Image (cartoon, one colour):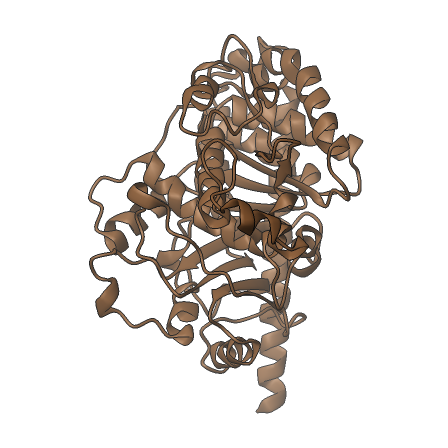
Length: 450
């Protein structure tokens, strides 16, 4: 359900940005509609226009049990979503990857494939797929992996970008989270091109410290994530000076196919009551997204000098010129705010879009800003997220074979646990080697200078 609720927040954000009513009609008057240019309809990358002038999301919502999908069917945007693309089974995955992947999930896969084919057939020049899911439960991990595998087979050349909600360090929703996250990551390694890591604990802290929300709800956390996804996709939905397409995220951020797990941050994140007191220069907001406490995944002991980036994409929205953006990036490098691996000293991609992020009415948690920035970075420190959150906890449980019978009972081979564990160990080692190569190269450089 976490992925569906996040998806709802994203579509709500898009509707406000493109002035689309909850029933899918545009808020513009008739004469304005007639004068719309093709540039004004850039957003049809994400919405399909029907013969009656309604705009329907190019979206599939799927869960193994009906509760959350029913919320979409009866929610404020129920008239906008096409009912044929709201899918659910009758029983959930019971927090079990194997149920989502091998038994209950398999039963709904044909329906998902059919709807995917229809979505693709109704689109011209499909760039790729964006997937929102959590990896700690059974459906997001198991069925999510199954769908990603199917997309990888059927649409081989298309990019798949995942927004993955990972288990948080201290907040746990179920005891077998480390198993589900481990097995899911094993599939993500081969079946997504870019994975953006998110965790609710990090976003919870941002809500508390920066927005003064003492007990944030999941809906409020999702509004923040939706702003990040909206910024990443703005150049696909609006005409802009420096636009980025979906495939470019992979090209710009992923030097090695398996090292594709990203860190992200957004700025400014300010409480509406304080907004008038806080001037936000481009330099300030850009500096902000590189501070670990503002990242949407929690790091233990993040060090801006030691924890090097392989690549970064910085997407600005609002009143920003490319000259200002380039000068800000130079300032970051010169002041050691960030450091890159030795073999990739220029790894910065800048995106500019003049349309600022829109606030979303009464449920909005953030103050409006004339300009904002989203950072997506490929940093070697991400391997620690897997080590601390997943592999250590997994090893403790698996050494006792705790709960393994639940998975084997759903048709999974026990050997798959070992395969997944080896796969993650190999990925962690790859990240460590990249970091080590960079450290060695840095030491050689220091020696030459002496």
